[in-house]
Amino acid sequence: MRNILTEYQQAKTEDFKGHPMGQILRSKIKEALIKEASLNSNTYYVAGSVGISRWAEIPWLCIFLKDLTTSATRGYYIAYLFNADGSGLYISLNQGWTYFKDKYGTKIGRGKIRKTASIVRDKLNTVPCNMKLLNIDLKGKGDLAKGYELGHVCGRYYDIHNLPSEEEIMNDLHELLLTYREVVGLIGNRSIEQFNDYILLYEDGLYPEDKFSEEEFQLAVQKSAVSKKPQDVYEEEEKKDRPEPIVNKGGKKQWIRNAAKASKALILSNYTCEIDSSHKTFISKSTSMPYVESHHLIPMGKQGEFQYDLDQLANLISLCPLCHRLIHLGTDADKEKLLRKLYDQRKGRLENIGIEINFSELKRVYGISLKGEE
Image 1: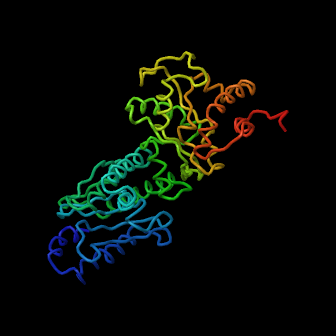
Image 2: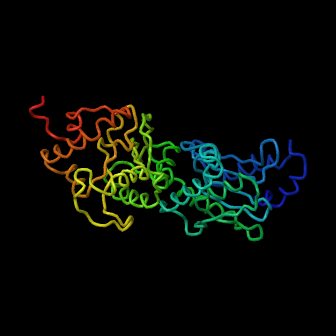
Image 3: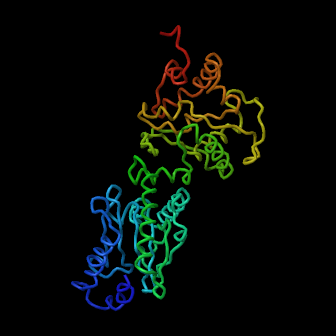
């Protein structure tokens, strides 16, 4: 690797095509790394690059777990990234910048990849003590250099004037391979895209409908309401196609709720309970208004049974905490009384957005006995 650091700057002034520098990184150093680190070819794929049709600003050598990815443009991998000025190199647990750029665009994508790196880093338990470097500086000016820097999860810097021994470099690699394996465990039964979408949910104000995220969702709704301006609350009600579900670690599909949208229901109700506007509650620390909660009349968990999106204002209800708990946990008789009032209020609006459900079906959704209706 010292050869790359000391000779690459000169090589870049020479013709790219057929230059031996490419062979050194793509073959010689690659093969030596595979041998010294005992990397099983059935498990790992190793590749190096000094560019495709011209010299790369940042030459690299990457190690990929084949079951996860074999491309530096997407997914997670270990990379040796050589500084643009030849001053040193990093061993970095990194991720593909091109995926984020293509999905979100350059500006938003940079924020997304940085946040993903931060979230993954916080979830890891096996980061070696000497590889907790949070930021890297590749001394480059190009888009890819910036992408590598933002995609860095953890790693270590090797200065050209103080390169460690080959044995130490191999030890570092073996330790980081364990961390790489932990990332695979975090991904679980998901594609890389499904994993990234899932861990960025809260960053985007989106929450799966489950008991584990309910409190966080309601807090996010309160905070979102504070930032709303009157002109932001109006939303035309129309049919919207059912969105794609997200996938959790176990591979289970879950439907998501938008906290910003849910906050509009609170504002439109003037922070009152839609069962009875006279219901008393406490003052919310976030909004300085009476505390009410957002509730989907037809639960998001039933989204798979409907062609159109359930996460819309026509299906969002403002309830005081007591009514909210009652509609989930009360007796069948009490739940039915509340549901009948809400159903009669919202039936027409739901039909306008393509959601059709009769009252007996709604009762069944809430686990209310249908005796006498069969």
